[in-house]
Amino acid sequence: MAYYLKDLPFTEEGKKLKLSDEDRERFRLVYKREGDGWILHDIYEKGGEYGDDCIVVPLESTLAGNAYFEKGQEFANVKGSAHDPKPQGYNSWIDLWGQLSGTTPPYHCCTDGMMYSSDGKMKCMNSLNKKMIGGHVIKGKNSTIVVEGEIVYIVPICEPHNLMASGYYMKTANKTFAAMLNYKVNPHAYLAQHPLETHEKI
Ligand SMILES: [Zn+2]
Image (cartoon, rainbow, N blue to C red; front, side, top):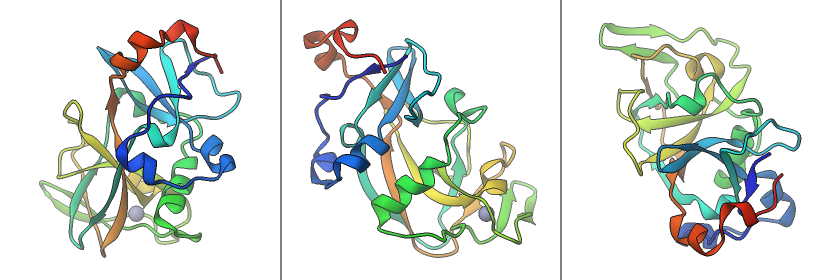
């Protein structure tokens, strides 16, 4: 069971978001403790197995904004400890991207269909473009480093692109909407006033 910080103050970008009550409940985010803060872990799912080291927060409390990747932008999957192996329920991320971008299914992989590495490139094995993921990505070629406080972007990619080995990166085929979330949160000021143990566990 995770602590539900339902009144954690919204970010400036979060305040602009007009979510229905239903969507607000649907897109609550789970952050897992790591070091002196919590890092992005999952979209909350009822019955999901979250430990006491997790907090659940409204999307509006951690939304950093919206951005666009220009055509040809290089980007790589985030390989944070919480994302490897993939948490259950990660399919919801594509719905979150759809919600924030105002896009409806079917979704398409935003890449140019190639997987890039320092050795060159190869074709992604996803000719049918079946399963789409809300990929957690960062700009650049290096999938392993998310600097503290950095932003993680959510963009639509296919499952093979999501599961690429580290060392590979992608490029956008076209200008692509990217949701920006805080990768790590440190709500210490809020928790000083509202200690973790005082929050409902869900
Ligand atoms: Zn793909």
